[in-house]
Structure formats: structure tokens, C-alpha cells
Length: 464
Image 1 (cartoon, rainbow, N blue to C red):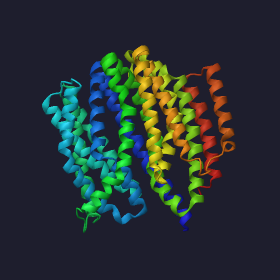
Image 2: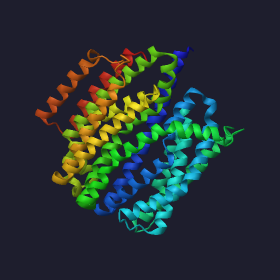
Image 3: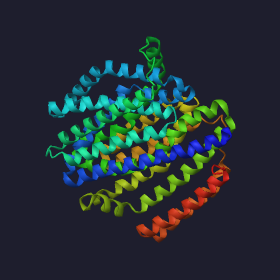
Image 4: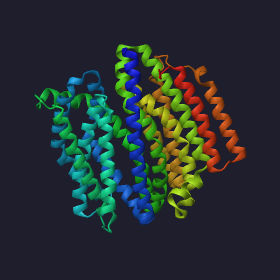
């Protein structure tokens, strides 16, 4: 089998594993939030989301931007897995005390009265989550998506299982224990897999390697910090300006949108290592794969946007119940970010693969600054809907600046997706005037997707 066919086969198989994993994981995550939203009050739901946001932030800080570095470096040189992983885990062990102190200070600064035991449990869980992600990313760099996918699925299964089994009335205690148990057990299993594969043989802590990791992760770290500020500042603004209930309405809808984001994010897992290889060893193949994925994500994102935009009330009622129905306009606004995020995710991974992560950071920086200004003003005067508008504008700004980083590659021309634009316009017009019910809308969009995605696969001869 030729190298080209081998790459095609690997791409397809890897994405089967990734998408199966992400669909499963997102469904489990969504079910967890639906369980919480229905069992507890909107205010309690909002309070938990606020704490989860903090744990995600500190988990990233503990990662210090090393995840993307791990994938790219191991994709180019598979032999580096043991060295990179050993030294990254050593750095995280050293940094954990700083993270615990930072988490405590953040809680006090934000005047959040979190029980000390719960705080400690969350803090330990942060370490295991970050450590687990390092191991998962190392397998992604090896393009062993079967292992990385199964580890992520296992973590989701464990957190859902413990949430069901535990009977604590205190929601924060219940979730914190589930968070710790799921991440610690999955991390131990991941380390056992690495050890059985003898990937830690002759591996040791090396100061030069530590320096290399810290130095080359710094741009990714800066990008991640900007990304956190960009993605999570709205949570803090709404909490402070509008209270937990309005935050609960907003985050419940945002959770649905972020569940859809798994599509480009999952694809990005296999895109990054493959694009890194293709860019350096076969630029024509790099261009071909980029065009295929761009057109696919563009059309898919647009179709999902149309479906959610015109069916938001029904979706909210089915998933969250009547008490959330008044927030359906929030879902309508946020649905406009879907197609933009799909393209942003692809371009962002492409910039990392071709070592233009500085352009990605600049894009996020400008997007963050503009979003923050709008976020404060619009949320103050227009509440949650103002927050939604700031999110949409921020995504557009990021798209514009990220696209600048690809302008010299000459890998996408406007005439190559005119037919897709025309089809999307027809679908939008049909929904706007006919206003079909949920099932009919889903059927029309699904048939359109099947037709064009089959055509796309055929055009680029991915299936032999």
C-alpha cells in the first residue's frame, strides 16, 4: 500500500475513533448537565458552572500550554514521547502547589464561599485532569487515536457513574468527588498503558528538556490565557452583573452550542499531527486536505446554524423543560457563532501545524480585547443578549485576523465553494418563509448534508 493510501486510511480510521469518542463524551456531558439542571435550581446550576469554569482555568494554567507542543513535536518525531511526557509531568508536580494557592486566592477574591473540603477535592482533581490530558495528547501525537479516545471516554463514564451513585444533597460536593475520582482513576490507567508499551524506558528528567518545554510552550500558554479570558469572562460578568439565575440560563444554552463545537474540535485532533507532517513533507497533500476539510466544515457549520436558529424553542423545551423556555432567544443568538467557530477551529489548527502560532495568539488577543469592551458595555445595558452579541463579534474578529496568517499559502479560492454558498442561501430562505417543524427541518438539512458531503469525499478521492 502506498504512503498516500496509508495516510488516507489512517485519517479515516483516526476520525472514526475520535468522533465516536467525542459524540459519546459530549452526550454524557450533556446528560450530566441536563440531570443537574432538572434536579437542582437554576441558581445552583449557575453556581456549579461558575466553579467548573474556575477549575478549567486552573487546569489549563497547570498545563502551561504544553498540550499543543506535545502533539506537534511527537507527530514529527515519535521517539520524543517518553522524554516530553516525563518532563512535563515533573513540571506539573512542581507547579501544583502554586495552582492550589491560586485557586484559593481566586475563590476569596471573588467572594465565593466554597467549603474547604470541596476546595481541596477540586484542587487535587485539577492536577489529575491536567496530568491525564498530557498523556492523552502524547498518544494523539503518535496518532494512536484509539487509545486517546478510549481514555477520554472512560473519564466521562466514570464522572457520570459517580454522579449517579453519590447521594450528596450538596451539588458542589457531589460534583467535586466525581471530578476527582474520574480523573485520578483514568490517569492511573493511562500511565499503566504507557508503561506496558515501554514508552518510559530510559526516560529521565532532563533540565535541557524542561527548558525546551517551558520555552516553546510559552506562546501556546499566552494563547490559552487569551482564550480563557475570551471564552470565560462572560461567565464572571454575568455572575456579577445579573446573578446566578441569568448565568444559569446563559450557560445552559452555551452548553448546547459547545456540545456542537465537538465536531471541529474532534477533527482538529487528527488534523494537527497530519497537517504538521504534510506541511513539511508534501505541500500538495497539505493543500488538498485543507480544502476538503474547509469546505466540509463550512457547509456543515452553516447547516447546523440554520437548524438551531429556526428550532431553538423546541430544542430548549425538549432538553431543559419549560423553566428554560424563556431563554430560547439566547440560543438563537449563539447559534450564529457555530459556522464561524467551525472555520476558526480549522484555521487555528493549521496555524499551529505550520508553526504560525504567534498569528493565532495575535488573533485571539485582538478578539479578546474587542469582546471584553463589548461584553462590559452590552451586558451592562442589554443583559444576556448583549453578552451573546459580544461573543458573535469576537468570533468574527478572530476569523479575520487568523485568515491573514494563511493569505500567502494560496490554499483556498472563492470559486471553490460558490455552490455551497448558494445552497446555504436556499436553505435559509426556505426556513425563513416556510418555518418547517423540527422533524421536517432536520430531514431537509440532513439530505443536503448527505448529498454534498458525498460529493466532497468523491471529489478529493479519500475513499478508494
